[in-house]
Image 1 (cartoon, chains in turn purple, cyan):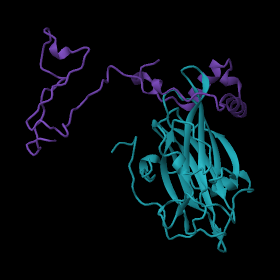
Image 2 (image 1 turned 30 degrees about the vertical axis):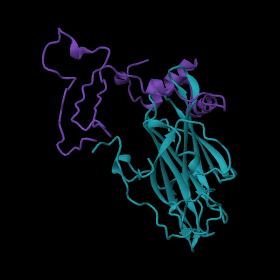
Image 3 (image 1 turned 60 degrees about the vertical axis):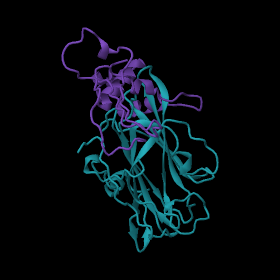
Length: 120
Length: 218
């Protein structure tokens, strides 16, 4: 798989040339009508054909990462103030003894809403 | 504002506009937006069917325009005409998108989309029963989702078969439903005209970033 950030929105003529090449055809030797006929025959599915692979589409991209926010606690029965400490395991880098510099990827607390109730 | 997605919640159709036997509508499918990265050339099959899955018009197949498309945003510039004295209120556009998945060069189904052609005036929703008596043409410009699933082709076949299916993330299809041009109070057809003349009578697709496509169903 090509990393998502490296994928380009190719012009269709380029994409078609690659597609034809993969089928052993030379796009430069085909006119538009021949290309349309070939592609129409090639792009045929039936009721047993699989759907397009969305894992490729939604592949995890480490350089982009994900960010998770814990926004609230709902229906708390403890009748007291709770704080949330979240960590990702692995790599649990928050607890790494050799870690240097300020935290950029973990926030122990960001904001306390004093309008909250003890339940939510 | 991002040009990748332009929200628009403006009302497109008028519920008091009546559909008459002399009425007609033009159905445009302008293109798709943000297909998955592993899509290549996409083939669109357009079927217009009623709730009994009976064809209202013969199915048509079109490939994306090679000169105007990219792999993510493909132009179809498809147009067809509805000029029937009798048409069931449940008639909808049933679209199927197929492509060659470039990750293994095999044909794959991208998914389906739909567009209901009539609004039930009493419900203010797309018609789901053919007994609806107050119907309005579902005119306007719309950005519709593409669903990553096989639609159950069972009767009654209405838009409700689609709306709960899983979507292809970010992908959409741009649809326009336009009132047919009229002469002496009757819808006229451009089919049968010489190709160049017919083309000159079609309404070109607006640019997406103009924000005219309604996103109320997206």
